[in-house]
Structures are given as C-alpha cells and as structure tokens.
Length: 232
Length: 299
Image (cartoon, rainbow over all chains, first blue to last red; front, side, top):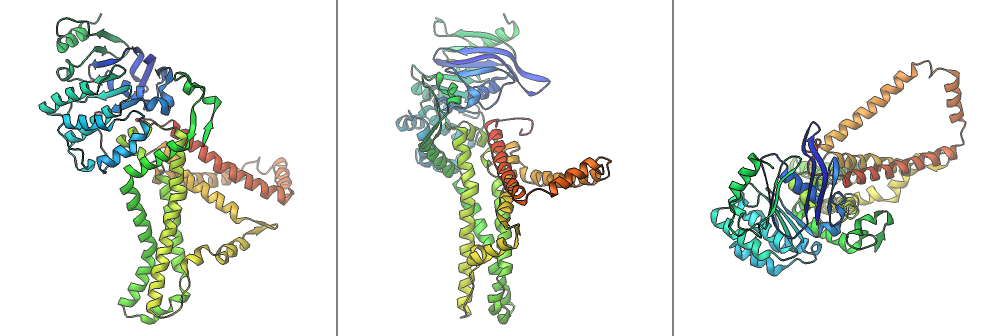
C-alpha cells in the first residue's frame, strides 16, 4: 500500500506544488492519476519513489518511508519517467546489469512485451529513437515484475499503433498483486485500461473512484472536465 | 559480509523484518557491475585519456628531438627524467582532483539521478562503490599510465642502445619517497604522512562539493578554496591589528602554545588531519543520502 499523508512539497518556497495532500493507493490495479497542468502529478510520482523529499508529511510504501530509499522498497518499485535516456549498451548487457536488483525479473515477460511492441531483443540501446527507447524501457519496467509500477505520461511520443501496443503490453504484464499508477493528460489512451481514477489538485483529491463496478463505459474526458470545473 | 544496524530497524518493519542490511556484499557487487555496465564507455575513455597524458611528455620529448635532428639531446635523456616525473606527477594530481570531483558523475543528468537514486541498493553500498572508483580505480589507472610512459621511455632508450632509469622507480622508489620523508622532519617525527593526509583532505573536498552541487562543481570547489585561503589570510591580517591580538592575555596564550610539548603538538596535528579527512568523507556521504532529483542548487 502506498500512503501519502499531509504532504507538503514545493520547488520554490513561496509556491507549494502540493500542500496538505493525502491519498492512499490501498488496492492493487491500474490507477489513472489525472489533474490540470502543474497540479503535481509527476512530483507525486517522484515523491513516491523517494526522488524528492517532502517539506512536511510523509509518503510510505508498505509502512516504510519513501525518503529512506530502502533497497527492499525500491526493488518493489519501478518508475518510467516522461523523458529519459538509455545507456549506450546492448539490451542484453543492460538487462544483465539490472536483473539482480529485481527478484522477480522475467526475461520471458520482457521478450513478450518487446514482441508486443514489435521490437527485436538483440538491440543497442544507444541507437534507438525516442519512441523506441520508450517501448524498450516500458518493456523492462513491466518485466521487472515489481509490485508498484509508476508511469509518467507513458503514451507521449508514441504513435497510434504503439499506443495500442502499450495497452496490450500493460494488460499482459498485469497481475493481481501489482499496482500501476499512470499519470497522464492523454486520457483517451488509457481510459479502457484503468481500474481506478484519481483526479487531484494542489491540496486535495477531487475524485478517487473505482471504475471496476461501473456498468457503462466511462468517458474519462467528460468526467475530468466535470470534476475539475465543478469539484465536490 | 553484512553489517546490521539496529538504528535502521525502521526500514524493515513493514516487511516483517527486524532490521535491514546496510551493507550486503552481493548487492555491492551488483552495484559495481551495474555502474561498470552503464558507464563502461565513460570509464574506458577517461582511462585512455589519463594513460595518454602520462605518455605525452615522453613521446613529445623524443619526437621533438628526433624530428629536429637533435640526436645528442635525445640520447642524453638518461639524466633528464625528472621533468617527466614532475609532469606525470602533475597529471596524477590533476587526475585525482578531477576524479574526486566526478565521484557522483551519475547525478549530473536528470536521467542519471533517476537511475542512481532508484537503484535498489543502500546509499552506503553505492557510496562505497563510488569512493572505490575514485580512490582505488583512479590510482590503478594512473599507475598503468606511469608504467606505459616508462615502457615508452625504455623503448626509445633501447633505440639509442643505452641504459636507462625507470620513471616508475623514480616516482615510487624508496629513494624518491624517503628522500622527501627525510627532508620533512620535526622533532624526530616524519611530517610527510601528515602532508599526505592533508592533501587527501584537499582532494576529497572536490567530492564533497560534488555531492552538494552536481554540475560545475570543480570550478566551484577551486573558487571556494581560493575564497577560504584569502578569507583566512585577510582575517589574520585584520585580527593582528585588533587590540585583542595585542593584549597580554592573547600573547600569554601564544606563549603557552609555544611551550607545549612537541610530541603533543605533532600527535594532535595528526589526529586533527585524520578527523578532518573522516569529517569530509562523512559530510559527503550525508549529502549523498539526501540527494534529490531536483533542488534549487541542482535544477
């Protein structure tokens, strides 16, 4: 369980990004983390990973504070940031280097995810385009088989076919124990994937709802606009 | 090999364990393998550069004299290896400083910070690895450079059919080292180790600033040293003009210092230097444990 309690964080002291913010990710499943620009979605993901230190409050992962960056916690978490670069080594070498840190890393799942993205396994990471890097990194993230997978704008930079491949890869990489948190503006890309939706603002959660029990397919864009314009 | 810390028992509570391994040797090896994999080209290129810089003065000396037809000068190099030793020593010192300033080179880029800080290993394991890279790895690379320069020098000497002196031996031999040791002696104590520890303190300050600011840290450290040195000099000058500095009480205090047992003074200096070195290392580690993806200092 990821628990966020009374969180305050700011990049500049006079302008807090998050202030008194609390939210729990108690159940497993795929969460959509939505919010207007600058509401702190990416910041929240970094705080969960222990990459940023809150000014006040606490983020805990299974009862352990995220700022400690304990290896036991980090081996159960994987972050796919919005922009990233991969080292100039072969995929085989890279996997060999990171595999020992993730006890349930599955090379079989990696091959399956790469196949979903129509990517070969024998590749040099330094020679890939941005979109290809994203596909490979997401495949590695899914193959790491961590209990918590955090993705920041995962569909940015992907073409239409790749977006469909991404959905397929996430579904195939899911299991009952996993919690995937997807922070995005591209609601159409992920709306059929989500089990829960969280719409956040600087200091509060505007909506935290399960989509599993809904009979009718939900229009996430409409829900988002309605929630943001007319918060409860 | 594991170190367990009860003070860090909090780490393991949620996982149903009593404590966490602060240092697990197998994980440390994994950190080393990971770093060597993702930075293989960086380490290889920098090592080649250092070896090339060590060989450069030897190569230039012989090439210059041979190309200008000054065979006598080239042949007389037996007695002229000291300039090589001095230049190579300078390369070694510069390399130690730059390597120290690049201790946390993974933190320079945003992606590097994400990779480094989210790697499932303890801060101690990562820190020890980075320290070994700059303290031991850099020393090995430099020694390889010295041996290569020496081999190159010997190769040219064989070309002239004359005997030779070894640059490596000159740099590291007892003759060279003890000569210096013997010169810096006070009250029967050798002071060279003290200077060595203080030099290490100086070199490690570059790592300390690197843990505080990930980019442009080397010029910043040089600037800080400049300001500290000049600031201290200025303070002494201003202090000497104050009435307190000329008061009987202060002069008596200075006289008391002069009357101290030299053994106590020298041992205290050694203790101070060792404590200073440990403090710099600890402060570097503390800053590293608090590294973040983005701060005002490191946008």
